[in-house]
View 1 (cartoon, helix red, strand yellow):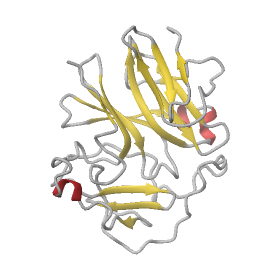
View 2 (cartoon, rainbow, N blue to C red; view 1 turned 45 degrees about the vertical axis):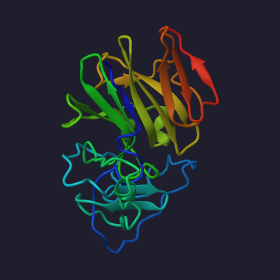
View 3 (cartoon, rainbow, N blue to C red; view 1 turned 180 degrees about the vertical axis):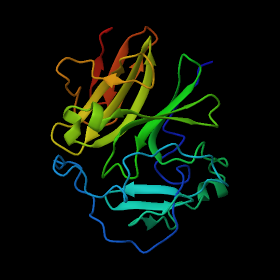
Length: 261
């Protein structure tokens, strides 16, 4: 029986998220800009030692996994075991585990110590699970592309790296920089990414297709002239029982039937 998971393993709030620092007096850093501003010059508002554009391999969970990240325009809040970065704020009481303590949720525990939001896990035809999502220290400030992880048992995850890079593989996306909510989909023999980018003029949702048929890519836009597919955020693909494939995004205000190719 096929099993799929989406956006329930590492929600944005910290009880299931994951790791990182002890409290320290914040240093002065540039605040994140309005995500609708043109970020083409300069591309980032903060240096990489404050906000990395990738999340990296991650690590096995230690203890109950409580704590984690909270990110936004106001910066990064964190409680966990990862190295301290300048300017990060303590998480405080924003994740106390009260839902578990009060019996509203079972004693949930993260699958993997990793900073990842908008998470999606898909079972592929090769029998392996593939995981991706919004990665990097703060997706409101910078992001380097789409990262991918693979697991045989949902317990140990191998890092496949940056399978689509804004700098190396992007075209119009280079001036946008914010990769949000990428999803991996296995449809027929195709491996597809549905994703969105914000933070600059011309942002929106689009689809990428693996040119090798492998989850690790490389990926390219299958549409002529390399356009966005629509505006908005949070793109997704759905294959119906009759084999037809549909594309929608955000609040589902529009839906598109895809051609077989």
